Structure formats: structure tokens, C-alpha cells
Amino acid sequence: MAEEVGAKALSVVYCGVCTFPPEYCEFGGTLPRCKEWLADEYPDMFQKLYSEDAISKATEGLSLEKQEKVEREIQKLQVKEANRAEKELKQKLASKVIVKRVERSKRKHVIAVSGLEVFGIDSKKLAKTFASKFATGASVTKNIEGKDEIVIQGDVGDEVKDYVTSLLEEKGLDSVKVERTEDKPKKKNT
Image 1 (tube, rainbow, N blue to C red):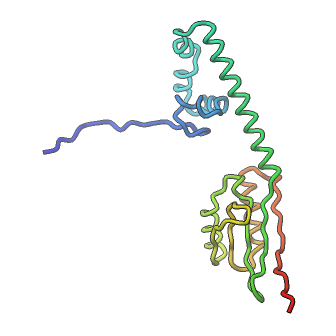
Image 2 (cartoon, rainbow, N blue to C red):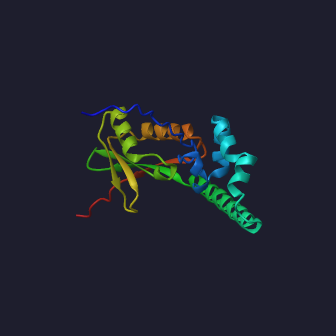
Image 3 (tube, one colour):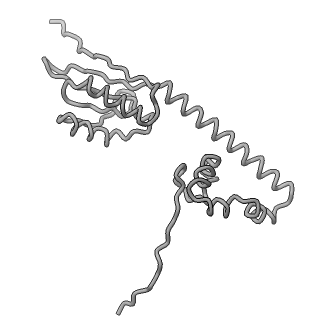
């Protein structure tokens, strides 16, 4: 017969910035922002991990040269991460979302939306949202460049452009261009 053990469930805190447990934030590369988040959300845990006493206890077995070396390496990693984050932000602001109207045959059209993967938007979820919002078919395919592209059946280009613009504004990316283009098939010479 099995006995029930009165084990207490363990509650684990995950960082709101890097999603690691706070003890491992230093390996994520966003340590300064993680520290700010932890100080705001869990001040007791912040004191336990980053107070002067905690740092001195953690480094008391190291020699002075090793401590200085570790501090230099941490500073290098922080600068490198800050530069990487700045580069990503510049790339996001420099890129644009393209909403292209493609003529299929006669009066049939589809809308192809590309360039969203740079902003961390899940294409499959957004395709599902488009399908329900516009009551039409929507799918995710790979374009010529090998990047995800959402293909929406029907001529709903203006509505898609407005929705994508509002979605980017919610994420704080107001300066990102959402460009609308037309792609007409070439007429066959007979």
C-alpha cells in the first residue's frame, strides 16, 4: 500500500528579464537589468544574492588577483551584452514589415506579410489570429529568402496593415515601417 508523503511543493522564482532563476541570471548576459527587476520584485532575494555580505562570502576563498580577474571578465561580458542588445534594437528599428498584395488569378488575391520574425512575433499564432479576425484562411509558409511569411486569403491588405501597426505599437516599436506593396503577375505573351 502506498503511503502519502506530506511533501511541500517547492516554489521557484524565475527572472522577468532573462527567464532564468535569479541565481543564474549572470549567465544570461542581462545581469544589470535582471538585478533591477529582482530589486523591485523580490527585495529579500536581491539582498540575499547581491548584498555586500553575500558577495564577500562568495568570493572570500579567491585570491585578490582572481577576484580582480573575475570582476574584469564580468564587466567585459556586461559591455558585450549591452552592445549586442543595442545592435538588436538598431536592427529592429531599421527593419520593416512588408504587407504585399499578390494577385492569383482573375479577381483572386492573397496578402503576404513578411518581416515579423525580427520583432519576436510568433507567425503561427498571428496567422491564427488573422484567420479568425478576418474570417478567412491564413497559413505560414517560407518565402524565397527562407523566412516565415504569413499568407492570408482575400483582399484584406489595409486591415492587416492597420492591425500589424497597432501590434507593433503595443510592443513599443512605433518607428517601425509597415510597408504595403502590390505584386502583379506578368502577362503571358501569346
